[in-house]
Length: 432
Image 1 (spheres, rainbow, N blue to C red):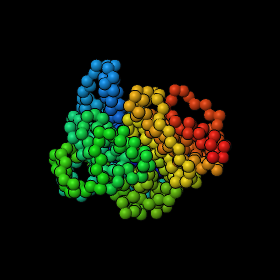
Image 2 (image 1 turned 60 degrees about the vertical axis):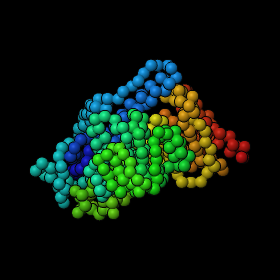
Image 3 (image 1 turned 45 degrees about the vertical axis):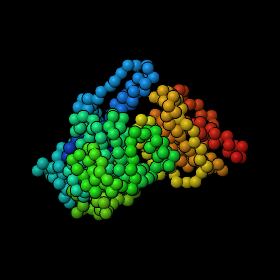
Image 4 (image 1 turned 45 degrees about the horizontal axis):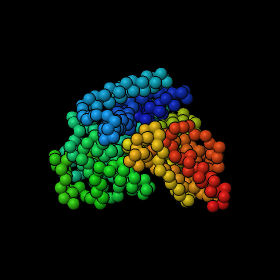
């Protein structure tokens, strides 16, 4: 079976490897760089910049305490250069891994036709096709939009902006605000609606008051015009460089004549990642939805398996989500009711010196006291992203707080989840 996969990001690359291992003859077509948005412009770049921010913040803290004599200055050109060099190395590893799996990688722009894809004047016939072309930043039709940057141009800054105006209210806006405020920029976040509207109120308050304490957050503000040196809003004018983080738009243009798409251009798929065309599947950002790398990989695997005749469906329940800031903000929520408990973060690796400022984070948990079922966990700590990934799996598999009664933690740790689990287990036992 000949399979062509268009898009070499998280969904497409994973789909290619999975299908090749299942015996398909796979050609992977990528326009720009293997690794997609996550590696080259998104998640990994945010992680890299956040590492720099943490170093700067640690220097300031230790200088304030009189431990070191330091006045760090950021060379943003060198930061960008280092990130590019590192992502290039990682991209080489991913490319080698993909080729080693038996996938034929073709670089170029794909022109998709019925039964074949043309790249660089060469036709690649397919029995099955997987579209994993990702997404691009949504650019609103605002006067002066050409003056704004998006995450795609983040490494184009030659120096840290003195003032930065971020238009947006979600995860990307939050992470960019954390990075540049941590590097010394005066940052404003302009929200058309509510800041982080999908996030728990207590977690959101901690983010705004502690993790983004130097950031001014404006809610219910309309951006009327973007200027080279700022913006005009419904509240007045603000000065600074402008950064747009107002959502993503799926890259479905190359295939929208062959498959059905939604209002935002997302390719419509079912749980088998099948489109309206019997031989075409889609996965990743191009189908809309949650839009995280792990979900894209899951969708890619499901698309690959079904294209190879192996029945498989995606399951979007118990998906852990996170925001990259000074401490990771992570959460998994089933939407079910429960009794809530919360606890301050623990002092430990990467949080010990935060004890002095009471900035070690926090953890919340909601539990059904009758059954011991965990309804939600929301945690801010250096270890929350790792802990919640495993906890979401335990929750999905039906583990209750009682299954952790004899749990022995690794110490020292900043994880507070196990403490809340023990608390809830003891209270359920007592019938409280």
